[in-house]
Length: 230
Figure (cartoon, rainbow, N blue to C red):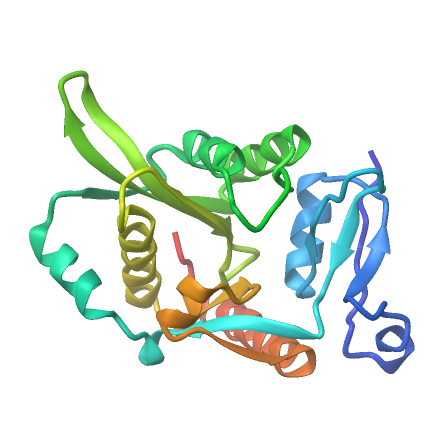
């Protein structure tokens, strides 16, 4: 399987070829090195029904700066209750499958196809994709009730999707992930698109150019300092 190498979109030669919705390319494969090449260039895959695989870098990108996180009062109260057990990388396959299965009122179906699940689980086994989980005790043992997963292409982190079956579970899993990333020296998180839930936590939109510069600087600094997030 041929590995796809994506270009630096800051180069005017390529930036002028980006589609109006941020489509960079159509087709290709989900080989681990193809995915890592994409994420290192600020690009992510988004399957669309009846179309070949599409690759995107939106005109505006949603990011969450850790120093600007706002935790609503209700979420703070839930944190104090401590009814969830929070973990990292204990159930990646289950988290991504639950994200795929979760019904979303604003979406018809899911972009997390079986091919995507297989590709990201492979990326996880190679140490480039990670998850955070929220559990509750049940008569049959620990029950997974929330989680989030994303990709580390080499010292930055792109959040991909979240799910919950109990209120606050996914948000607390996300905050647990952020606490870990912050402890490793990371200061921000790429969340790709801005949702009302993420906006309430303090996420914001920045331009593609600003995001690409920020990502490049982060990956360069991580390489120089040998930063390891996991």
